[in-house]
Image (cartoon, rainbow, N blue to C red):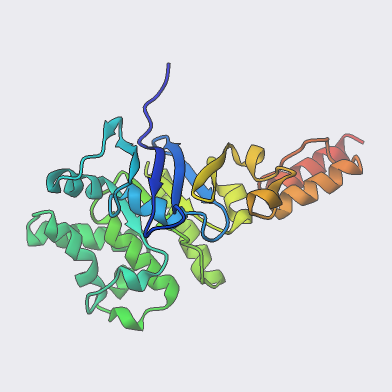
Length: 281
């Protein structure tokens, strides 16, 4: 029995101008409730694919679907889709425009036709979820990069989407900002949201994702579980470095310190494997 994916893209083709294709057969299927990492080199088409998933761009060929229903590009369909599939841009300054935090986050709910009171309730709940409620009156341009990213996520959350599509959410963040963002993503996943993230942070994707897609030259060239994709010997040809934990586990396996093929995805899993090995000696 097959389960219909929440979001699917089938053989998408797109070009911005005459010449090379930005997407050249990109295909992926996102199961509901999963954490999905999209990886690949710069220029692979990740951002372009995300703009198609949110229907900001329309493919020259191929098909997108949401819960098995093909995309239509009528105003009614697009309004409903963008309430269910929220896009968070890589640069939050592209997304944030209002004078203060609450005004920015309230914009989406107000455009949904909600009452002012309900829109404020949703906006404040979204800001609380990302740890920014105490900054609701702060001018947006006074925020740090990490705070801006959290406000951008809140603006999408206030629409109560089923899926969040995030382009390089960890880029440019310091350690506190990165820690806060990871906590936010954990909270969203626990709440049942589907998360699709484009990232160059392979070490984070290794421990975080349920499913990985590799994009290169506008095509999906690999897909599967992190252990099957990110630890591959031909990772360089696919456009990314192997995760540090995968490299360490492989080196320890070669020395028979860990079982051959062990794939710890967190430092805790690696420590448990080493403790088990020591306890068995």
